[in-house]
Image (tube, rainbow, N blue to C red; front, side, top):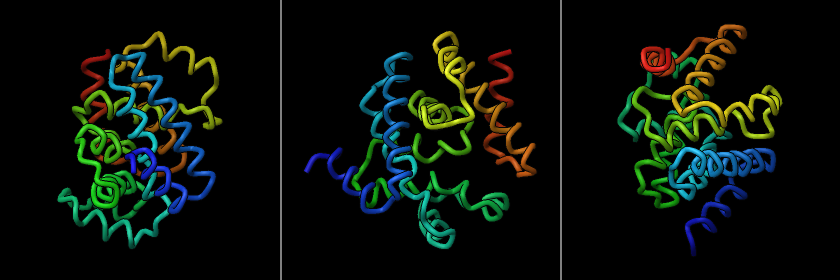
Amino acid sequence: MSEDKAIEIYLKKNLSEKRVMHSHRTADTAEKLCMLYGFDPGKGRTAGLLHDIARELSAEKVFEIVERDGFGISKIERDYPVLLHGRAGAVLSREELGIEDEEILDAVRWHTTGKRGMNGITSILYIADYIEPGRTHIDNDFRMKTREMNLEQLVMKVVKDSIAYCRMKGYSVAEQTFMLYHDLEKKVS
């Protein structure tokens, strides 16, 4: 069975239809962004399909899974376990689906919080998850402007928007997100 077919079966078996549709839109967006910015569109597509495979698991199950990834669990991740679904998804991608490509696994792992020093596919997925066409907080003007920004500028825009959203909602912001913001602030300013 092909990798794509195995992923499709896994998605349909383990996710709601709404989440499967979001994963497909994210994969389509990641594929297009990869073509725009010169990265492997196949890797972008695969990362997009996989990024939320742990999103609908219970907090207890997510904690159990991320214990195997070796990164530890911060206080904010304990308080907001949804931040861990990317890390859990990377573990499941490797263990359940045999994905060994570290670029894809890193993209899945860090798509929620971002991470300083992200590689191209990780940046692409971080953006694609935020701007996919089903996201109602993003308008078509913004999506069109993405074509005028370099990758770091676009990641910075998503990071700023994410931090502003968390502050507006009264949520804490993950340390990885702040570290990414400060790294990009030096480069993009």
